[in-house]
Length: 287
Image (cartoon, rainbow, N blue to C red; front, side, top):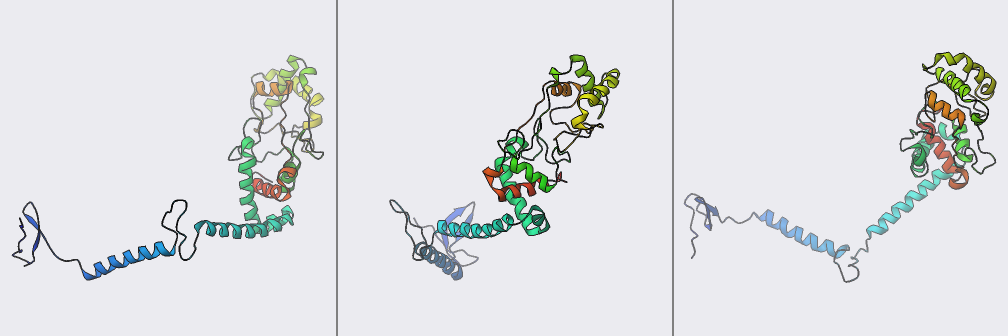
């Protein structure tokens, strides 16, 4: 049954659809809309012919233009490698001071060094270079071996303690449990702790000062400010590598913990070591 009829107001026939007393007028689509629709269909077909599109059993159509997104990415990567190689060669031929004096090279070195740091250094120093117990914080101003760019480069390049490198930073703290008795260790630990804060047993300070002068001042200095030539830390600040407080200091005096850092020069190469040194220095704790 055909229930279409002519709308009395507009004079246009309806489609026969009715909802709640409302009938749909059977107006044709605008010409411009139809032509736009036809053009999009033509464009879609032409696109699938010109570019890879239709799936086959083991591959796909190649398209008339032979375009490949993989090839385009490969070309972009190759171009980036050429540009990178140019800057890598420039960094390789420059000293640390030269790199820091050239803002472009410095920016590139910081970026490249940051990437190398994430791959090789975060396991010990943390993702933010904040360190942890036994692993130094690279953001502060406390540097056992010095924190200027050349000193940082030296440390990264040759490592610290038993790194299998003849130019590694070497220092060994004796185990004073073999030298001092328990009471003496408590006294000297109290004295060292007092240099940066209050202690539980102030009565131990005088004796501890004497023990420190006789056994510790040779490396840490008479005022306990440390000695970078020996890698001896400053004991007067509030920065402690293996824990603060009398108990932690006593444990270190008895049987010291001494970390080992690999020599990265042979593993990463001269250029990457320079980039790492520039990056570490850029963290704000360098000198």
